[in-house]
Image 1 (cartoon, one colour):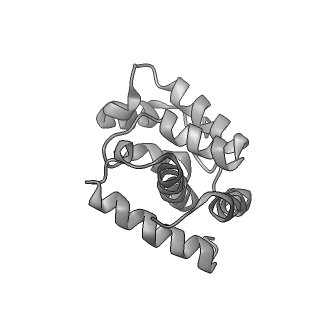
Image 2 (cartoon, rainbow, N blue to C red):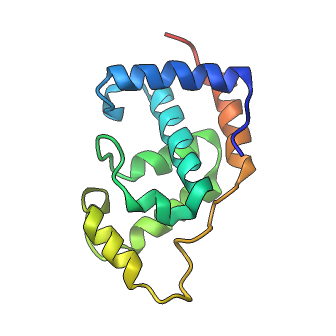
Image 3 (cartoon, rainbow, N blue to C red):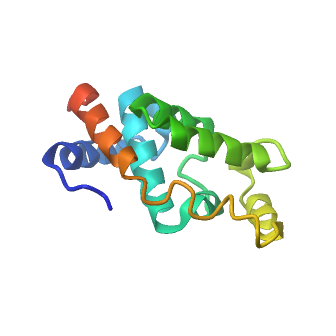
Length: 142
């Protein structure tokens, strides 16, 4: 569940407004904003369907998955960062962030007993706690 705190809500609103103004290109945002956009967006998707949902569709600007891994590390969620890193390394082709159909085909080809892309990281409340701490410590409205 996404916590509803004024500091996180205010940061989310401000950061996503800047993200939209930047043409939804995370590379055009400062690191603090990239972190909020990446973690808030990714964890919302993961909480609704696990890593499979995260990888099924392209992200705005098609950033490399390392952007998400680094964002999770910056907030102190090393466990989820490691899961994402391991998931990316499982794709049998380079630059999976640029190949939506290949990602989908690969995940569909996995044996049903291979649930790596399933519920991992889903509902991890520590992520939201760490994101809130990160916002409290680093977010400055521009």
